[in-house]
Image (cartoon, rainbow, N blue to C red):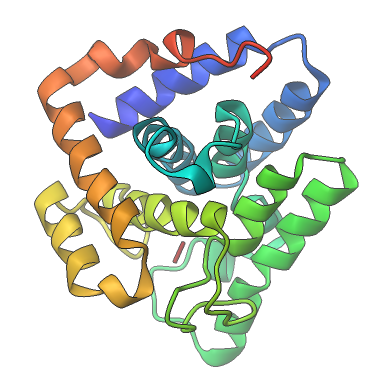
Amino acid sequence: MIMELSRSFYTNMKRNHRQQIKWQQAQALFEALKCRDADTAMHSLVTGYVSVQLLIHLRFQCAFLQHMRIDDVYLGGLLHDIGKLSMGDDILKSDKKLDQSQRDELEGHVAEGVGILRKLGMEKDIVDLCLYHHERADGSGYPAGRMEVPAIGRLAAVADVYAAMKVPRAYQDMERSDADIIGYFYSNYEQYDLTIIDALAEVVKQLAQNGDKSGNIGEVHDEKGARR
């Protein structure tokens, strides 16, 4: 269901913003990623969709999220792995454990993506979601291993990991249940923001209850001037 909702959300957002240069650029990048690797593109669709659902759930409860725009958070999620365009198939599409050299190249996708987005003049939240989505609150993430992770990065980390566990990949041929994923987050709470984990638990519960009623949320909440 989450993949169907994510595809529908992309279609709605693309239609609503089709006249904006920023969205035309983002769509071109995303379509290039989809041609390069469909699994990574699907992962990105889910990351973008879940990022927005978390923002909608939390933005009026948490002052540190209130400045964020839905469309910027969505584009950040959609393009957070765009740096993987430069990655070789031996890493991007591998179903084997990576050696240290390959792991270093994989981690380089963050800097590659940030560079692309900055050259295009993308908004700060879009760039920062890409920059911080692999950082962790306990300092175990990358590229900087920072413990003070901005709010956009804390939100992105949860959305990205959730998507990584839900979307089948070459190295993971089956999705995990929502209960298993929420359990993983609570078992590793020191790496994440507990407020955002709690929000994810509520979001997946609501999506399960509402089914495809959430498919048009891009229209309802559209801004009006306002391996992983």
